[in-house]
Image 1 (cartoon, rainbow, N blue to C red):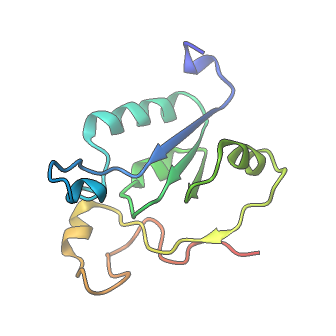
Image 2: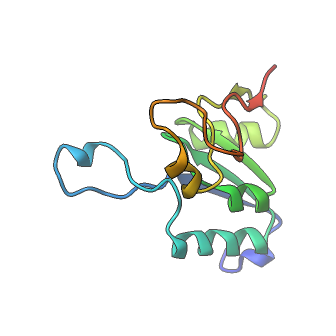
Length: 135
């Protein structure tokens, strides 16, 4: 559809942001900022402000997504689910379940202030470790 405003609902699948590395060894691992680059974030937020959107983010590592979490109609974290599985959960065919294995920090400043050797110590995370559904 050319105009998102004409849609009843949008489904947006995102991958955790990372900064590509040139070094061959480092290129195998996603690292760098956990926040989306400003131009990409602005495009995502424009869509979220236009149409109710189900956001599904693949969390191969933590991400800084407070603006997305606040504006999405619904937010799902996945760890490799297929499109079919996402649609089954979205439309009630399957029941979602799971808990976050790590917290989702509110900002890169919170990430910088945290200690790398202490789990779950970012101040005021968007979603804390263990947040999610338990059935």
